[in-house]
Length: 360
Image: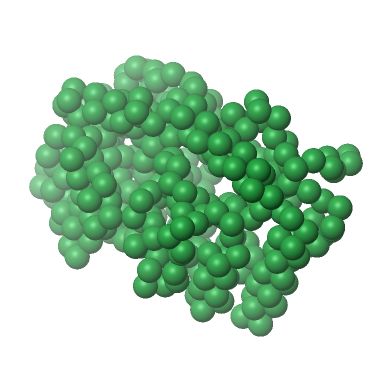
C-alpha cells in the first residue's frame, strides 16, 4: 500500500491500532480527513522517519519499545540514538513531532538511565507534548524537564460506546461462576510486578481474617515475575476467579458488572485507562495516594485512596468498609464518565493536529 503524500497523515509509534484509547483519540481526526498509520517494528519506524518523501505528523505514543525491546544496555543506547536522530531528520523535513506522555518512564524498565535520556530528549525535540493530566509536568520534574510552552492537556476520556452496555450483577456473576453474597474485588489488565499484586494479596488476607467475604477477580495476562504473588492470592483466605489471559472485548462488561470495586494497588501511577473504564461502568475504585491523584480526584465520591506507606492494612480497611456499594458512589462514577466523553477528547486532539499542520 503506498504512503499518502499528505500532511494529513498521522504516523503513530508504536502503531498499536487495536488499542481502544488510540481509536477513541483519533476518531474525530479521521472524520476530518486525517489518515492514521504506524508501525510496530523499530526498523520500519526508522525507515519511515528517515524517508524525505514521507509527510504528516509524527505521534509518539509509548516510546517504551525503543529501550525495552533492546538486547542489553549497549543496544538500548544504540536504539535511542538511532530513534532520536531519525526524529530530528523527520522534523528537518517539515514533519511536526507530537509526544503523548502516558507514564513518566516505562514501567519496570530494564534501562532506567537510557530511558531517562530518551524521555528528556523527546521533551526537547517535540513540537507539542500532550499530557493527560495537569500534574504530569510536576510528576516528571525530578526525572526530566518538560518545557511548559509545549504542553497541551487533553484528558483521557471514558470508554462509552466501546465495549457494550453493563449487564446485571447477578447475570455477570453467574457467567463468571460465583454468587451475589460475596464482595467482588476486581484487578483488571496486565499483571506486572510494579502493579502491587503482592500488596493486594496481603490486603485480602487481612480483610478475610477480619471476616470479609471476598471474591478476588483477576482478569489479565501475567508479565514478568508475578507467579509468587499470584500464588499468595490463592492462599489469602478468599475465593479467586482467574482469567489469566487477554479479556475479549465482548467480556469486558461482564467483569466490570460483576465487581463491587476495582483495586489498582500500584505503588506509582501517573495515568490509568482502567480507571476510566471503571467509571464507564459505574464501578468505584481504590487508588494509591500519590499526591497528584489525591489533588485531582480527592473530592470524587467513587474513589478512595490507600496509604502507600501501609498498603496492605489501608487497602484491607477499604475492602471491609462497604462504601463502594452505595448508589451515591456508583452514580458519581457514572457522572465522572459522562463528563469525560470520547467526542470531547477526539475534538481536542483533532484541533491539536490542525494547529501542528498549520504551523508547518
